[in-house]
Length: 251
Image (cartoon, rainbow, N blue to C red; front, side):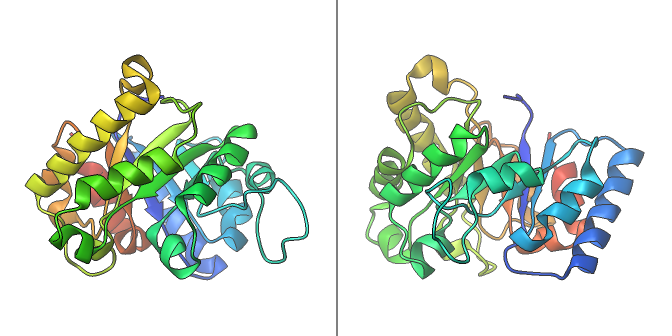
């Protein structure tokens, strides 16, 4: 586990192969010219992982998957297994993103099962949690994220196999970002809950990312928080200059 902040680009379902290679090529040029002060990772659509992983081999730019199945293999048409991600060159996988939870009906129990399978092959699990606007307005934010943590995070979690990503659902792709005070409050609660789940020693140094309309304009103030261990970046990660500017905002 690195003590540097982690900046992860979640490309979602965007781009063709040529777009993926051009974006990564641009990032690699920037990395070669000036080593970033953070750890950088991109999570392309599954169909582009092989090409991207080949391009970044032997560089500091890591590659992750956007999801995996809870089974290591089987009759699951259209799904991708954790061992397949590993073979393609992934060293991490995002699990429990709100778009998966909402659009595919994924429960926290399912996220937990996926995490167990992913870790069995050595993948770092980036477990995403976050509340809806209705839950926040009702004053249930801390209860919601704490419950998601307890139900999504496997018992064998430590800082080597776990990263938590707090993404308020109401801020994802909306252009609306949680205030620094809101982020600080929730991240403090997440660290406290993870100390209970993992034990204080294992939880020391846990990276908790913030995600939700992260841009070059707000990255510096968010990443300056001690409780923020990096960012899970959506739309801005599709443009090399914006993604790099967010990385440059790391203290």
